Length: 483
Image (cartoon, rainbow, N blue to C red; front, side, top):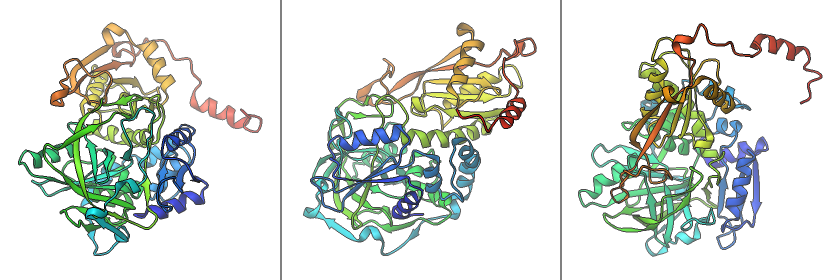
């Protein structure tokens, strides 16, 4: 399912797409998107946007339900609950990594993205809907649900990432990429040699491509191939018009240009996944847009993070996938007995991570906590890792907090990692951070909320019904249970 329009049709069939006309790009889209996201409502397709060509559209709240995540992954059936969807996803990321080489891109000569091409003086980014998402954003953001396409100049590998793109002028945007991310590393390789970095930005695409761009795909693998494995089909691409980049054939709207070394403009802040305005206003790299390629009546993907660090769609699908990839990472690092993992939504699926284990030896809980906090999937911008016993559901925050209240000695069971990998978006970044050098640190807390290993046999029994008894009684009285 490489075509976003097929995805829209599938969502409409199950009643999870709402079309809205006349909604203003100035804050109205952001407010309505937040409300639909927090309520786990339908995807919103905004059309007839004031001040823009009649066919221009914006799609938000793309994957806020298990049904829409399943459709995006081309799964064989609809999943209506998170538990069964996580079970379906368990093992999938490692399978996709293994099979990605079997799905190399397919270069085609013509494609829907070439239906309309504007170059040179005909480039006008103001014709593309670029919402002001939040009241105190530093400007209009043309790219939020976007996919940024780069090529590593040393390996030739195509990389896809999701980085925020701020509208600056009719042919200029700025790009913010956190230090340590692949996109930042690639851009530096060009600029250190005083070379322009070719950049393409897909503003609308199949949700699977956005998923691949936001997941922790190994640095030696192209997200195109990974996405191909996810969808079980080779991704179709076209050659760039003025760059050596490969562009998604079914992109709805695509910008192509270059980022010159040293050219900067003020960028930010933007209402971020932390629940705060992330990244103070400061210079960011400029991308000069040379070409716009787009389909008739293009659809731009966008999202507006909720303002309380609360549920929003990107966090939702990150939590689903990280629960699977983190469990795999722990296993590969040699941590046994991992029963479940959940990176909680209120922490942006990064800052509060719960790991459930069946204790097998003294020190087991500490091992799980430290590895989870520093493995590839858990290292960026984390804050808390809580390790619990296997009688605790790591996705149930009340269960996790109960374990912390009843099984933790704060002095003995909380350890810290200082000067860990953080980001400019972190409102609590360490005083050791050096913003001018793009060097950001934070501190991690590792909380051992397991029953002390030496007290497992004499620790008070938990007051809880056995699952078998509870299930039996509920089944008996299911016809009268109405709450």
